[in-house]
Image (cartoon, rainbow, N blue to C red; front, side, top):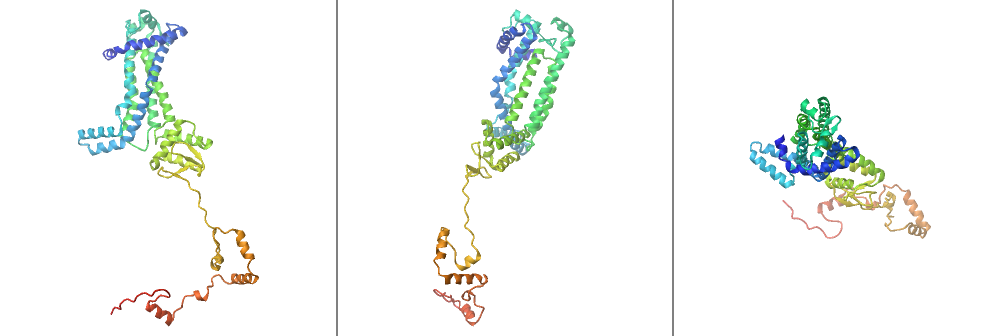
Length: 436
């Protein structure tokens, strides 16, 4: 481990300088030789590093989701070229290039953090060995050796012997109890972080080898931390426990506010968003508009949680727009078709008033533009005799038809006309030559 740590000795000077600057601040509050001053200096170093790594963390989230969406295609490639590993690798690289995905992006925060981790280990190891390193001079070295966290020196390890621990001014029992508790907390936080990712923020509709790998890592990483943790100084355990807690909190925030589509976290998020939007009639934050915009753009490719969200808005009289906003009413804005295309809501077409059978038979159909005053004027201007005649006609059975409209019931005249093929009026049809 010393050989690996020495490879990162080029960064020990910046790391030691940052620790010394934080120690000068906390030393004025808690005292320069206390464990609080040196311990909080290490915690502040972790927070500073993780803040600088936030852009890489965002890339990690995007890369992880992109890998999840590519898992079905990757599985097809593996099955198609299972006997040709070279062609399989070429097709995988082609898929990554077409989708713009880099598998190493999911490991960027860990890779970027490793130099600081090994540099801190090198600094603390120098303190335990009574050697000045970086900007830590002899006075700071003596102050760091006196610092204890709950009775355990910063440079002490779980595997150290009683003589070495006594030289640092502590007892072997205190060192092993404190380091054991910190190793358990470090492994438990890593396990919970990975389990939270697998149970809440993974698309459950897609079963891929990637999910099996993540599930395996959920149990492998805590064991690795437990095995390697017994060889870490107390200061490094403080560093690693702090970064695990930061990762857990950061991931909880991302899962709650920007969940993976198709996951349980998305179902819970859309339920909260539905309650808020239906209650207030609008969205609150820009992130909510971004998620609604993405749901609208999917169209028919929406999952069951997204379709339920759109249906809940529709039942509440709300319409989700293509820009991520939500408006009230059907005629105020464009509505969305099933495939996600926005169409303007047209006004309802008015159907003409249905007439009675007596009005249709008597030929009293009024034009659509006639007003009731015109109808009353026309009825008043008619003679009383005409009114009587119209009343008599209305008393007759409605199914009765005039004799002139009755079809001929058969006879020589009708039969001969049917045989001759002549029409009742207009030009006559030419006779076709008879077939013998």
